[in-house]
Image (cartoon, rainbow, N blue to C red; front, side, top):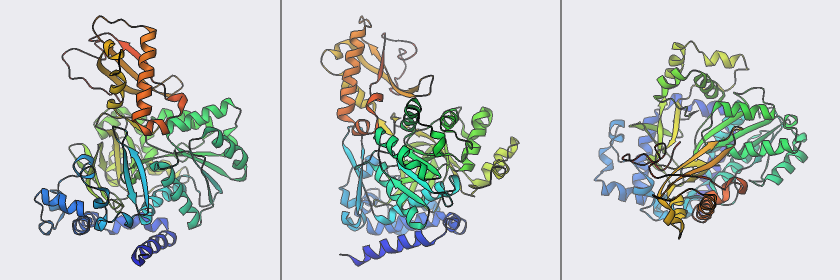
Length: 501
């Protein structure tokens, strides 16, 4: 038994338990975060075998990188050029996988699992994000709270990570009790109805479309959600403010800025940032003022907007792509997960909004004032590598391609398709696949049914996140067949894109 591993766990837990949230969230004000990121670089260069080799291949001598300008010249890490090139143990400190004590799983584009080891101390940083949510948004320091984990359990990264972090809040003294039905709908209904009345509020934690399905199904069964003072913690999807309002109305929400929170998370490094009452207040203003949103984000679509702690996760933006650095079981430096977006400082955000006559701080002070922290903002449009996110599962065009390459079906189609997640009139999400028919082939119900079945079979076979995250009743894709060269989906002479956001 290694005493240093034991001591590291004790120190991390003790610091988390005894350090007030206020202190944790103000550390960045007294910290040169760029120097902290540079220190992580030197520590990785000295202790992580894979990173040593990576730097050598790029001709980097760590001794020559001593300031932030040097840091910005360091080569970016990606899943392809780093994580997939080295054995798992070599990505950990001293080449020892056993320095970590838990491994989570996420799926890659082929359905082959990617493993993410982490140590107990890594979860403490993420637990602070959950503390920020439960304290600032839900007032859970003063209210008996039942936290219902609706993420998939097992090896999947979301469920166990979230469960652990919520339990640590209970250990810190918050009156929070955790129950783990996972994504079992019947069990979720049972625990809420049998336990919910013993608490002042019930927090459902899961993927947005799944939580909406739970709420809608519950209403159909006569569950009075208003009785339980429902709050929502979500991850894995971008959603509109109209969606937030709709779901909020159905559970009886009275305070849109305080009753739901979205997390910006990744399997690679846990929670990178989180919505706050302040960021939600700002996003709702921008949703109603598209000119302001375009001026701020450079696009008409509304990204996820969160605040982050630059001591925990250090962000940079290169050509509209987000890079982050942070300590984990596999420490990552200038890591590019192909998310497009940007960063805005706290002061710059308030100054920008003032030009449009909006003061979100004053707005929130009228609602109690919690959740105003001088943390920087990061906005995220989503992955730029052609995936779509559905119930938290990353779905890849490659998965659909295999379904169209099966015998008989491949004679009907060109192989082109457009994959997208859409919403119906009631804002329920569904997976849409528009498939281009081969020349001379006509649309028919039999063909649609056969193609739907083949795509579904291959999605479940190849993509284990899809099979485990998406409820069975939402797994069947809605397939439409379009003629060759259809001008909306398959215009001739234009480079084809297989996904639409």
